[in-house]
Length: 120
Image (cartoon, rainbow, N blue to C red):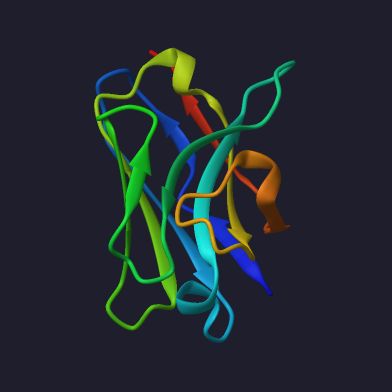
């Protein structure tokens, strides 16, 4: 399983940003997928997840939307109305579990993160 997140950068409060996660092979249709973030000095937290059939989703906040492309090769995280507290490194991850929306500890595979900084 190979995952590569991209799309991070420096944005201003109130801006929107879409992160992408490129996945190898049939990862998105085989594994439950999620986006995590980790702010400096804090633990990694699940902020959005999508089931391998694409039907079930979870979002920590309504400002975040997880989706995937029809070819099932890229996972997205749309983030709207960004706040300084959203500044963190964002990771995509895959979980090999039957649970439709996995618990945080069930995610097995991780890609390198992409840094998002929200600052005026």
